[in-house]
Structures are given as structure tokens and as C-alpha cells.
Length: 177
Length: 253
Image 1: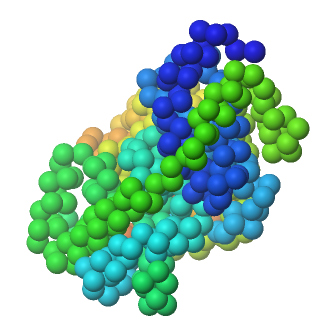
Image 2: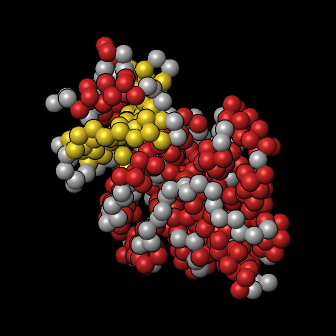
Image 3: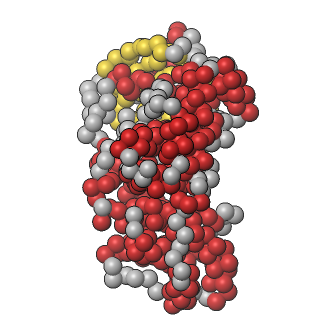
């Protein structure tokens, strides 16, 4: 049972990041119900470890726990998604997917973008969420996902190129248009 | 800066992760090169689209209240299979375990594909270039091999050989983690005058082989394997001195 003062401090420092925690869990698990379970479990773990938290920045700290809880959940429930082999290399210039303006204008419909992000392998989806939505630095992402900083950059490069590819495919097949 | 380098760095550039000097180089290149300028535009447009609020999932109504209630009770849902890890004592242990599991996981999932020497050579040079440009050369800055070597404990599934040749003009600067050939590897950083040498090393099942050399993008690459450990030394240092460095390492016992 946590002490009152510590719980109050925890609620003050960590609860404000509920939005970020839920967003990440929802994107990785892919549905509301499991996202809520993962978030609740993550907060309970975070409270346990809170005594050892000395850092300034509680959002990446919480997201590390959410991320690990998510991947534990994936391993037990979506094993097949994780077995995709990641190609981490940057392959020079990426293929040009047609006229960039028109493509992105068309892709601006958020339903199409949502579908494209959902189709990314979880390891790619994760870096896209942490970088593009949470605006975290490579260093923070490297700590959260337990990968070297150089890999953060190359994985983002691969993730973005894959996302580009998915967007142009969805656009051609007319989904969400 | 050429296009190849620019494409390597453009993500660091849009993400604001390059230092001042490389930012200026990139800006100049993008200004002059329509191809890279197009890539830059696309990446910025993608950021605008993906960071749109409509894609950010809001927590369901009532979740915060439910959470507060759970936290007050302070109980975990221990009966669920996937929460069996919840009994960890501290974040330190937790983080170490996760790292361990993630490490084993990656090794298990990714080992089957063994990259060719050619691919690894490219990866090694790209990694060398990135380390110089993205201002991420060193995780553990130290010229003391007794500091650098233990730093890798728990971060790698092997213990790299860390040698010190300061008396012969190759000064150990530190080390960092890298990800090459689908695994975490050790990168040791040495300096010879103003030249940086990256030495990448990891265990391999392949047989020992003598020193081979390549030249790529103006860098010299020396590769050899000894006692089932493979070594890749990369630098813009002249080929003669880099060979001297490689031979010193290889002749160590």
C-alpha cells in the first residue's frame, strides 16, 4: 500500500501524462479495451517504481514502462506481428512516390493515414508515434525502446519510407478517399 | 556534401538532431539540390499529417477516475498471465531484465539472416559516417580501457576486447553501442591525430580470416576475424597507418 504523500506526488507528476500513455498503448495494441488494460497495468508498475524515479522528465519515464508493458502484451497476444524481420538500413534515396504535393494532399484525410500507421510493424509504429506525435528526442526514444541512438535514426528512416509506401498504395486503391 | 550523405542525414535534419555545422551543410545542400529538397518537403509534409490532432487517441471518459481508484488500492492484477513480471523490485532491475529479454528476442528473431560481407561493409561505413555527423560518437567517454570495457556489461551478450595503444599514437576515446548485422555490437572509438577510427566488433560463427581491405566513399575499411570475433576498423586515416592499427590489434593475444 503506497504512502499517502507519495501517492499524491505520483498523481501530481505522472497522471498528467495519461493522454500520452493512452495514445501509445492504443496505437500499439490496436484496440480500446487492451489499451486501457495496458495503461492501468503500466500505472500500477510506475507507482511501484516511483520511489526510484529521480529524473526530471516523467513523460519519457512513464512511456518506457508503457512501451515495455505493450511489448509484453504483444508477445503474448500478437506474436505474429512481432516476427516481422526489420530491415534497419538506410538505402540511399527512397523511391519517389509520384508527385509529393498531390499525394500528401490526398493523404491528408486522416482515415487513410490512420490505416497506414496501423499497417506498420509495431517497432516502426512505435518510433513514428514517439517522434512525430510525442516530439521526443532521439536520445529519449533510444532509452524508451532500448535501441542505440543511431538505430533510432535509421529505424525512423525505414518507418517513414514504409509509411510513404503504404500511403501511396492506399491512395491508389482508393481507401479512405 | 553529396546526395548520399544528405539522404543519410536528412532524418536527423528534419528532427532537429544535427549539430549547428551539419545543419548549415544540409541547408546549403537542400537549397542547391532539387532531389533532396523534394525529400525534405515530403518529410515535413508527413510530419504535419501524422502529428495532426485527429490521429491522437484521447483516453476514454472515466479512465482517469478508474485509474485513481486502482492506484489508491495499490493492487496489481497479478492473476493475469502477462502481468507475471509485475513483481519486479525496482526500475533498475526491471530495465535490465527488459533489456535482456529484448536482446535475446532480437537475437532469436533476427539471427537467421546472415548479411554478406558487402552489406556489412556498407553498414559499417554508414555507421561510421553517422557517428561523425550526428554528434553521437561516444556513449562512454574514457581513455581508460578498464572503464570502457565494463561499460558494455549487460548491454551486449559478449565482452569486447578493449585495447589501448596510446603509447603508439592510437588513443582510446571511448565506446558506444551500435546496431549492425542485425545485432547489438560494440563500437570503440580511437583517435590518431585528428582522425577518428571506429572499431566495430562482435562474435561470429564464421572461421577466422586474415585482414581484408576495402575503400568506400573515401574511407578505408579493414576487416578480419580472429578467435570467432569479427573486427571492422573504419577511418579516413591513411591506409598505411590504419593497417598498422589493424595489425597491432590482430597480433594481440
